[in-house]
Amino acid sequence: MEPKITLTRLLYSSLLKWKISDKRKPLVLYGARQVGKTWLLNEFGKNEYKQTVYLNFDTNRKIHGFFTDNISPEVIIKGLEGHLDNKIDPENTLLIFDEIQECQRAKDSLKYFNENAPQYHIAAAGSFLGIATGKFPVGQVNELTLYPMTFIEFLEATGRSLLAETLRENPNVTQSSASHDLLSEKLKEYLFTGGMPEAVKAFAETGDYREVRNVQEQILNNYRNDFSKHINTTNIPKVHMLWDSIPVHLAREKKKFIYKEIKSGARAAEFENAMHWLVNTGLVYKVDRVANPQIPLSRNAEREYFKLYMHDVGLLSAKAQLDISVVSMPGNDVFADFKGALTEQFVLQELKACGNLPVFYWVNDSGKAEVDFLLQYKNEIIPLEVKSSVNTKSQSLSVYREKYAPKYSARVSLKPYGEDKGLFSVPLYTVGFFPDHFF
Image 1 (cartoon, rainbow, N blue to C red):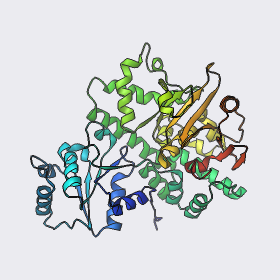
Image 2: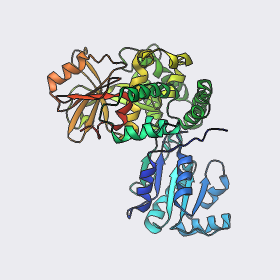
Image 3: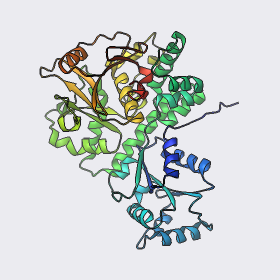
């Protein structure tokens, strides 16, 4: 008998809040391609509404005809009812506008649904790859972003719901040695599998990392095909070069992005548009450097100095062609492999998915001390150093603390939870709860 796979998404609770809000507007669900937007909205409609009307603007071009000259809600709804041969009850129906980036007039219609027909529950979705090329009406929509599945979601999908619940209830306590070891082992699996739902599903169903890698390579191929679909011809080679260079940069001890390592003589101006396009699609995270850590960090960012990460650690593993054997490495070697890039990637995407705080990194004037991430949390700036093992010595974090005396500091590693004079030891597997559940 095939195992029962349960995919649950943390964003589901946000959808519930959107449904009952008295300030509800049409929803736009952002996200990179294949992170699970369509599945989540259909699951939400199935569970929370009497009826779901699913419209895909990419696969069903006929529905574009309902969004032409007259895009008033009354005209659109009447047209859709005739097309479906069914009445649309506004209070009990979820209207899903999928791949909405394929129809600008459908985007424009959201303004009129918000202003003139707010009783309709409309959730639009589309990949950043297409949405980045168009616009939504300003101030007329609610927005949410779906990221790859987090480590907690991975635990639940792979049959470890009780372990996930224990972690969720007590992220800031020291786990038993047995739980700590089990969580570390599951984290090794996650670093290779990542959070793309199809890859997680393949692992949960088969436990075969070869199947996981096949899924990941197909996703990467789909992305490359999408580049040609959404980018002008001039920028396509530049986007490919940038995209392909990310694992190369992350494999270096100093992970600062250097254009000249893409090709000889390359300059920022030549690749700037291509780089911004990749960031805007959600496929790449850009982490800017800060030399003077003052609030707001965004004002003090040195945007010409930055690090680039992919949006999913599993896809990074595949793109770097890390061999499947890394998962079976003894002890914790997998966390330090690839210059610790997998661990940093994991930490960043957990911070993005679970809180989406502004994230930067710090380097001192001499360039000899570097803190992996700086978080702006409420009125505090929190330095966060990432370590790939239980060895947590960090001269750079000590230099930062001595110079700026932050109220809170954090060192993420494989060591259990602990706290000493404002320095928090954060186990890697709990970083998705940081900093909300620690202070």
